[in-house]
Amino acid sequence: MRSRRQRRELHGLNRDGNVACNPRDREAAHRARMHGIATENPDAVTCRACRTLLHRERREERPS
Image (cartoon, rainbow, N blue to C red):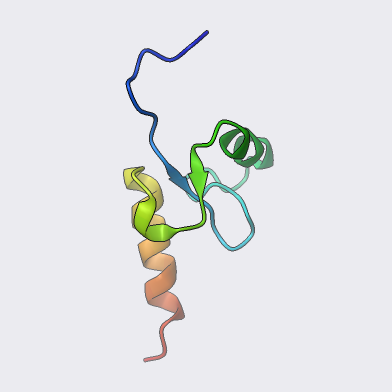
């Protein structure tokens, strides 16, 4: 069944290669990659939850 939405949200992948907004579900990461809705580029992410989590992750990595 096809989604009725015009464009799907683009999810971000964390360091472990999992979807940032659902890090425990490895199968979700695989599905996102196969359907072309996952990216490693944090600037291209459109999922609000993924953007928030990836931003927080990058902020914690920065040296103080």
